[in-house]
Length: 370
View 1: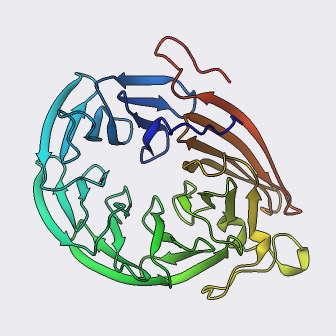
View 2: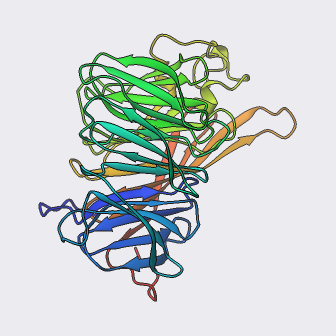
């Protein structure tokens, strides 16, 4: 793993698309789009600093916002950009800085410090304006599918509660009171069924079922506070398999939801603890919690996602034998890391760095090298 540098981080923003097949970074020179599987640089634009670069799946549509370092790249202007033509399609201007943008195939969400705007993506018709508590970090979570299209926003600046809006039907769905301290991170599963939250304290991560706002899992990351940089569910059409969390400590924490809820896992087997009941109000058995120590540079902001999960089962008995996963990490000092993970039937985690390359030195005609 690359050594941490004392110089300012060259990456201003980083985001994966809705299915984690591609990712984008914004720098002080421009923005770049990469293929997650191959690491290939697919597109780049060098015109100045960008603070937000969001993709719409693997389409040519981007939502980009300048970082304000150049007069032409205002942080108050959202540009919908076509990478095929290299041209701006539409622009939206706001009175204050844009702090976050989210998209799916039907909705465009724009987060300001005290408001959230909901647009119909194709026409850019404004559908709703949501007044929020002061949200200086632009904290939000958004599910990419239309069938369970929820937007989560902080509900308080003094405690860790979240409001969930159904942005297809345009109504408040519920409020979840998750933590005593203000929220630091939250993420919705790709199917919109679950939301995970972490507070500024950074010691507990909670997972709630969105439909009825009930707590399903609760994990203790550790005793000492740390800043949570990212939360990410593994890809799943039903129950998410893995939840990953990166933080300022330099360790990445994995919480194995799939194995925890698997019906063949029993206390007597010694395989990942006991059967998990329908509702869990206490901290989940530590057997479901694994730590990748020093996986990223301590103190450097990072963004970790689980891009692939494979459950290995016995063909004769359907017994779950192992869980294998691929985790991708973007570090804001300019590196891409890919880890291969495996948790076997003895609940032993093995992990190895599969790839590492510098995101700033890759060119369109030069493949990444470790």
